[in-house]
Image (cartoon, rainbow, N blue to C red; front, side, top):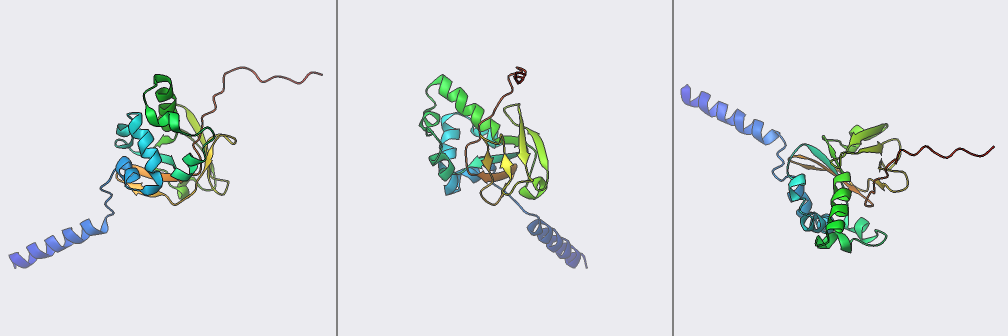
Length: 177
């Protein structure tokens, strides 16, 4: 009787483990293993930001290779990492595309969400649009593919490199009457 109970418990444990989704790879490893993000992973490596994609519970709005190839002005300055100014700008752009928490397109759909980026600013995610829009209306990006699960979060492919737009605190000009 003891052997059967032990075997039964072992079988239950194995089936429970196999039923739970296991995402062994973190976001960085998942990006690196996916050919549509090869340019993005090169930019991450060139700017010493790999650690930002391996820890925490995050959602990455990740521009695809096609999106980066179509970036006005290109991304060559983001790939070298040798110029401190370029490196600072590249880091800001990459951190702007990462938000805290796990957000799926389904959880964002039908509403406008404001999230905090790892750049420490706010970003608007407009799920009332189809496709979902990330960032400023003019300088943001649209979701361009299915979400990809990783051990520490979610990757959502986008069709452009979103650029933050900051309010400088200057009051808007009033029309002359």
